[in-house]
Image (cartoon, rainbow, N blue to C red; front, top):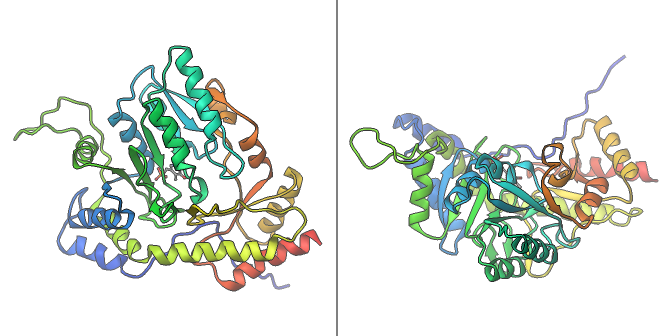
Length: 377
Ligand SMILES: *Cc1c(COP(=O)(O)O)cnc(C)c1O
């Protein structure tokens, strides 16, 4: 008997544009096989031009490293508390613990799925009342959907607490016409393999002035003092991006607008073909923002319903994934403080990320929707 192997469809695979290898070759030709060199500078320039709003960027080895350095630059240290959106990937929260500080998790609102302004206000007031004013806030544009920048930043400003804007999933998303990554006291990007563009692994710290950028680069390159010998007055890290990988990044920046378009097209296809099916819904795009639709997420009526879809797709060699498990429900953070309202827990139970790569073809999308439709008939 013949067995046919169905073509594997991944959730969000890398998608090269064409010029990446040219820039990587330049690194080889000039022997800049190091965590510095012209590709790093040019990649940073391309990021700064794309994000705009006057941002400076420092390319690093990962988005996690960028959050770690952002927290350190903002003065977070042992014994401090840092507020963090609970509904996110663990990399938003883990670096808080690297510095000996504690995360305080805040739940989401149901319209953007991001940090709730009301709950944030409540959490800050409560922590201040207990003599524990938070040192920083990590807010996340989850799945590329911008959080309510004006509301969240007004609250942070009122209490004079800096914001780290986790834009790992939101490169190419905009809020009131400005690019995500440009709003926080410090912003971060990720170029991990599953993100909208990738350098296989990598990230960037975004800031508003050259001094902060220089500080980030200093910390990312072992904190070397200005001396002919190796001298250190501070603890540093080895977090700078390699010039080889920055070559991939330069090529990827050239196709970023196309990648955003393709992901938005995927979302529209799913919405068109699935929204009249019993109870499946999508997170809306408010008129004041545009999402890069990094991943298309559906909300189903129940956990069982969600699992039926996920397993049916898996059975046909198609990868899908439940939404992020909130941090306040993670075993590692069970002792952490949290201010919750049930929103992220409910989203986690009922939500599913569908294949969303920019290289998905029309017939892949038809195949996926066909399986879901057949299942629910
Ligand atoms: C991917 C991601 C990160 C971390 O990025 P890495 O480059 O993988 O370290 C941080 N926050 C969120 C929300 C992410 O999705």
